[in-house]
Amino acid sequence: MVEWITTDGLTDYDEAVAFMEARAAAIAAGEAEECVWLVEHPPLYTAGTSARPADLKDPDRFPVHTSKRGGQYTYHGPGQRVAYVMLNVGKRGRDVRCFVQDLERWVIAALAEFNVTGHIRDGRVGVWVERPEKPRTVTGRVAEDKIAAIGIRLRKWVSFHGISINVEPDLSHFDGIVPCGITEYGVTSLVDLGLPVTMADLDVALRRSFDEVMETPACPTG
Image (cartoon, rainbow, N blue to C red; front, side):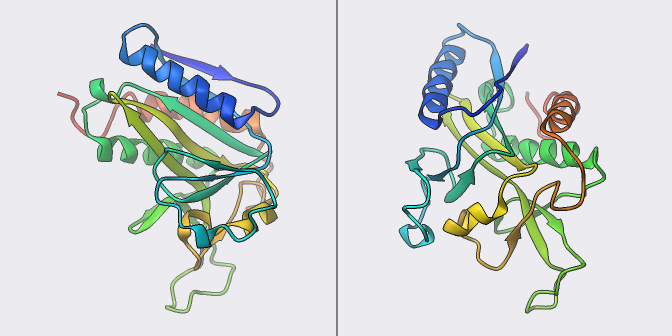
């Protein structure tokens, strides 16, 4: 069983981390069920374990939180759905790479419910969408923007942190960082793509696609 929690309003980041760490420890000890927690945060930047100081372009714009999740700098704020996943990877195959691939598949399946095709690109963390209406890249490729970020941490084979999907955040807030250390591509959201999607709409898609993807993992669990 996976418990789903949806918190309305804006959740303090440090309080969220404290909750995740406590819940992950309880799951590892067999004292609590797995959990997916859907939240929004006030505007803030987080620095993952691979964050480069030079990628924080405007350090005084919003609070900056050092995070123990994998990855580099990312932004959280209103209009962005953050899904924190406290799941027992030890019982889901003990393969971190495959677990991350399942998270990617989950995001892509949720986006597909709005006729958005998400892509995974080698060397670029997150989920991307093609923007053929924009000028092509210097290498002649179709332009792409990032719509979702993924960053997790494991402790005793239980995950925490998770994914974030842009529904309708203020995209200018990403200007204070180099998102995930990638400079050649932009950032988008479901509303920026012209889709009148609400947070509640995305929550339904995440819940439905979780059962289809995360409960039928691509990698073997035996």
